[in-house]
Image (cartoon, rainbow, N blue to C red; front, side, top):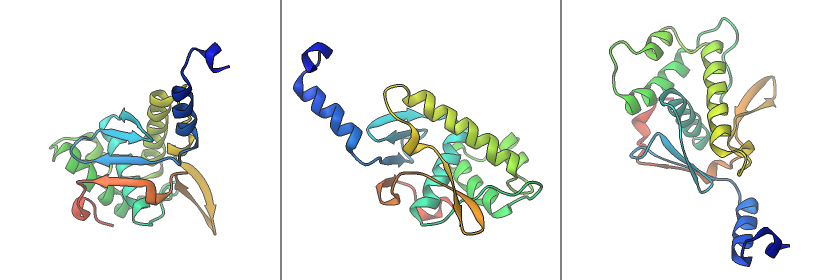
Length: 168
């Protein structure tokens, strides 16, 4: 069967190993907006890059992430996200993202950014790689829904990202 596929035994073993290795994510402040999902580098647009990094930092620190309720503005989420956003993009005087989050992060911003992020990851990985481990998934946690990844927080590598890059 390997001969019919036109690949060597070693290529088949490498492809199989890739499928069974636990998923991992690497982010390096010096190389962003490129993330390495498994062993595949992908580049994300600026706001989605900051949003994904914000999520990864929260997960790596054992913090949950929930979507703000409709009509509720979360100033803490906006502050955390903007501290990463600003570090990546610099302080932009008339940045629409900064203006939009002036009162806090709302459900619309969260959901729209999450949707764009999910689509960017799928476009970058499909059809060769299953994107599911790297996509935000909603889980029930006691009384509320939280967002997480299938990637073990121990398999999230954050390089050159100082603790002061965000403020929980």
